[in-house]
Image (cartoon, rainbow, N blue to C red):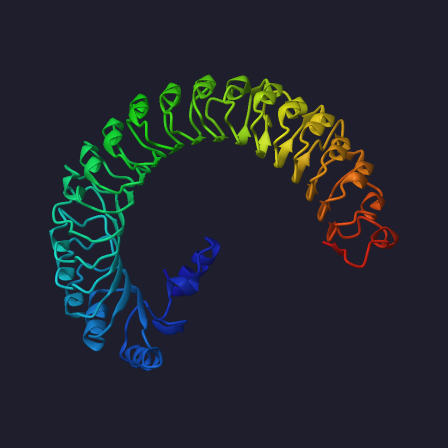
Length: 493
């Protein structure tokens, strides 16, 4: 096939000709010297010139090969910051960079990291290679490290050699299949990431003296109960974990926050056994019974796009300690009026949509018990009994987006009962009783775009604290945009 035909084929496929045939280049970006594709003799001269004008240059080599790295290391033996991405098979030349403090590598074919072993000034490393392994013995002498991010593959089967580090270093050891976590026992970190790791036993982490936050994102792990002995552990992420027995979470009496999602979780009975739990996130899981929340002290709850769509909110309504409730993309929800039992609620959010595919409208009768609510944000929702919003007597911020676009408009009559309301945003919604805003004497910001049912801004013009009004461009005649105090900024967008 001719070059012309190849180019035509690439264009037909939407591919970038310039990217495929990218020429080597050397450029400056801030304090970085960026080398792309290849380090030619001309490029080397350019890199020297640019680096000479920067006090502490960071070198970024992108799309380079082994020969390019060797050439660079010979030319810049005093480099202190280096990032390398490309088709490398070895980092042997890096061993000569004795002043290196930061090293980043993305090269899936590099197996041997031992050239870093004697670079004792390193304080930060970020390494990505699916073939690195089998252990971390090359790290033993790197005791000055303060940030470690390793993204490996199943070839990394042991954490043996992990260095003795001082203070509270940031550590992420991801994608590995360690037979034993014991090398981490004395690690003083308050946060630890073991994302996508295959873990046999979490018990060694109980010896970490300061562990407060643990991420097991995407990990394969069976039993969480050994973490019960991590006295300072407060936050656990088990997002996308595989093969887990979630009932073992009941042992974690000290944990205050659980972040889940994309798991096979279908039973949250364990929350009733967690006296310290205050924040709980669920996403794309199979829970249908939320009543165990009634025996918890959870204050912040998110239910997002659950795979078992039928959500009986009467179970959520039993969580009487809730202060922040977020319903995101729920479908098949029932008994929304029961949420009136959440008398401690301070923030309520319906994000994205509510019962878009199946189920009844949201019943604002829930607001009858929301005398402490400060913020309400509702999106993509059909609301009935909107006048009951008057129960939110402490509301300071109201946001309505794509609300009641068809059928009965959303009534703003209730805002007259909200003496502290300071901000209102209404977008793409159908509204009634706009005149009630004349009583919102503390209102400072009002924004309304693509709203039906509002023909005059007169109710806003006498508000003493109003500072800013934003409306859709062309939605009102010029006469309507006048008559505000000089201190009010009126914008059309």
